[in-house]
Image 1: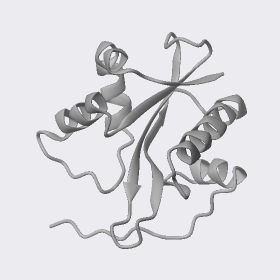
Image 2: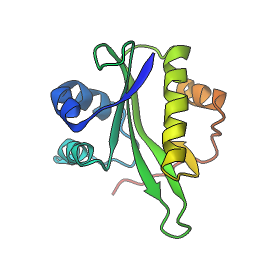
Image 3: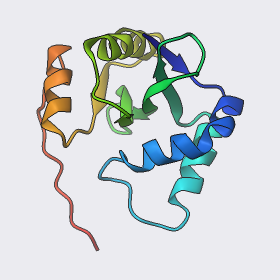
Length: 146
């Protein structure tokens, strides 16, 4: 299993499928607006949001899962993290899938000066998988829609 970081032209080529996967797994901070998915596409194409896929081959042929990430820096402490912005799987994630994601994403985070990897999760299965790799569910996100 491979984790592949898509190039802008690959994102454009696979946009309809990626759009579906991303829209189904957006974090709770993403509000419903008419331009939401256009904004996400713009950030993907400009590099502010990275798109990764898991595939059984080294090319984006049979896509099993879609992950988006972004760098987030706390303005106060200047702590840089890699935020797993969304994660969608077209089938239940296997151990090979999660192993394929874990090492490259943590290496990518370290290589880019991040202190940690953080993620949103609502699904208990995802939390369980994340805990297997040392992630700790520490906080709850509280929201108030206006």
